[in-house]
Image (tube, rainbow, N blue to C red):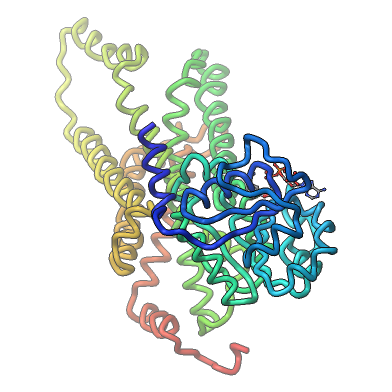
Length: 461
Ligand code: NAP
């Protein structure tokens, strides 16, 4: 209840002042929700409808008239009607001449029509000042209070004054107008509500693909191989052991993939001798989803931490730890402490803990609420410098943990490398190239290129 009321307050900042009359065509879900909110904010609302009968769903204090009568009462007409019914507006073209007509419509599919709904409306009403707005806000959000993302209202239109009038209404409703330019932007704005986590698709599919691949890789080497050649039934590894191997491996590879496009971009810029030529599309897209790749990597690393903390509770681990103690007791011997092993286990744990700490720090800084409170230099410091430090620590954690197996022939079951070796390929490649890139003889020309210098200015055409 409280949340709703506070949101309602945020959406109704100033109700004392009486504002102008606004006309809304259509008394459907959105028309009613918007009208209700506008009345709360002090506007006088006139509905243009096919039926002038007032039902109790229509907000109190609103008038309901025919389309033509309603349009004459206001300078701003909001069309809360689906695009497929827009042809009813053609006979009203003269009445709507010079008026600000707001298109709020959405489609059912991406790029459903050759032109945007707003451009179609402008074609139907050549004399009207068409503005696109409100399509990213839902009727539900208007009624119950918007969340931060749905508070943003993208506005576009060719008439600056008309756009400003609509943006004033948006502000008065407690929403945030974002000017997107001319009506050409309308198609993109109409596609926006249809997109489902667009930046997350590639990282999610990639991490799922890696998870499935490494799961079956471990299943083959740790369960099937041991069953066939060692006659051990380790099928229970599926529940904890394999996930706790797959999670860190996927996390490390994804973390490497966050920094790989940066070094590839540097190599391309050095090769071309200019920063003024576009990167290939695949690299552009890859760079845009680095934050999502990093956050998914952090989720996998967190799972690895939880699995590891829960490990001592496992009966297999208890049995494996008790075995050498019992055999020492039976043989009446005490094995001396192997300090090399103690060093190795303490080191990889320490590297893992510190690496995970920095990983969390970098992940937190990428959240909008945190990144908005730091300046660009601070953001770059955390994302780049601390990010690389995280990559170094996590790579070292894996190297120290798995290093002892890399040269042992028993690690190559079916001539396949251990999964920890595979996980190191991408991060090690990134770190080696990055190391080369920070040499002054490479770093200097790269910095100059990034500051605008060109090796051959004419070749950049
Ligand atoms: P709706 O509930 O179906 O209402 C549409 C209204 O259009 C009807 O109530 C009707 O109003 C009018 N209408 C229907 N057929 C008509 C025809 N043949 N000729 C003239 N008018 C006709 O739809 P809605 O959910 O309010 O959505 C309206 C528009 O807002 C759509 O373009 C939608 O994409 C957009 N939108 C909706 C939401 C949302 O959350 N619902 C969010 C953003 C954008 P009368 O009976 O009064 O004539």
